[in-house]
Amino acid sequence: MTDTMTAVSVTRFGGADALAVAELPRPEPVPTEVLVRVRAAGVNPVDWKTAEGYGMADVIGDPPFVTGWDVAGVVERVGYGVTRFAPGDRVFGMPHFPRAAGAYAQYVTAPSRQFARIPDGVSDVDAAALPLAALTAWQALVDTAGVRPGQTVLVHAAAGGVGHLAVQIARARGARVIGTARAGKHDLLRDLGAEQVVDYSAGPFEKEVGTVDVALDLVGGYGERTLPLLAPGGVLVSVAGPVDHDLATAAERAGARATSLLVEPDGAALDAIAALVAEGRLRPVVAGTYPLTDAATAHEVSRRERVTGKLVLTVD
Image (cartoon, rainbow, N blue to C red):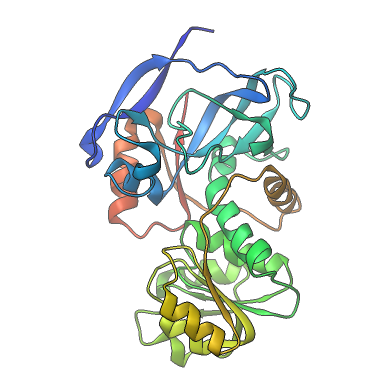
């Protein structure tokens, strides 16, 4: 093992041309951390937003830094005190978020309890597509909204990275799922478990959706239009941006709740997500893969297109 590694560095705030392939020092695990040799790294909108100077840029600070949070790979070394994993274990996770994790690299170090084992038979690419998006969906639907059997869940942008996993997690919890998406993505969403799919571009979704118990806004700005659909005791969770005071107050007056969420590292939730994957009840949709050194292209595709599912970088 050499003392350096290949990584993709954000050299300055800007577009894809601000990314550069670099040779950087390989990190070393401190006590309670693992050193993971990265095999694949998921691409999320927050990656390129941060590279452009917003997203999590205020948390990370000025360039240069290595962006990315979705990691799938193999444990290479464990720090003192680690009991969950041993060298050779295949793991996936979303370490450190919103602080820099440096996933666009050959090696990552992070606390062992921010990872989980990759289920047998699941590829590195599929595993890398899961952490940030699946944890967001899980923490919104399970931890925040407490989705339970018999409820109706509305997922806006249901074919996107978080959305397509939220549809499956809600369905696995025994809920009836309604998703909004363009018509060309309806068959996929029905295959993933959505009972009703609404083309938001064909007309107001409010006219097609009845009363719901939980609504997940992954677009931003849908709260005011969605709130009247909530049943008493219902929950609106905004992932795309904060819920303002007026919306929160209106929800309270209606006997509902509106709240925002920012995903956190959570190894226990990753274990639960891995169990759903192992049972065949949750699967990521990978829209495309790119070599690590072509991260700039992946950012451009994520920025310009309505990606169905996730994009993933492969790391040699």
